[in-house]
Image 1: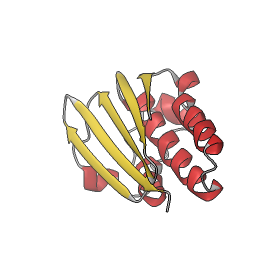
Image 2 (image 1 turned 120 degrees about the horizontal axis):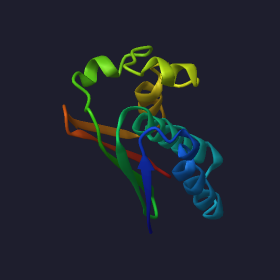
Image 3 (image 1 turned 90 degrees about the vertical axis):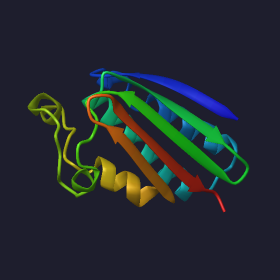
Image 4 (image 1 turned 30 degrees about the vertical axis):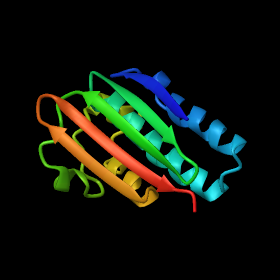
Length: 137
């Protein structure tokens, strides 16, 4: 099963749309609620990152019998130093984004804590691809 969602940079009212829909699907499939929570937290953080930092992006969720693979691709400024960006509290969010309650520098660390595999590939000036895998077993 595959699901695809479009994200628009700056449109915080739609941040969470993909994670909310994926949560419903996982509940219908009777996936362990603890795993659902991990998937939803990671996906929501990734969605907010795209909305806060990129011009546009996509979420593709591939659901298999034993895992979910989430691939998020964006067109945006990219991440110059992924290692630095993974540190709790580090953020490049604008003051406007911070005033809305986002951009505290916990997005990438929270994603890493809640998935079994996290791969980030970023090209400065072009965009970022994030792949997250969570196993159900």
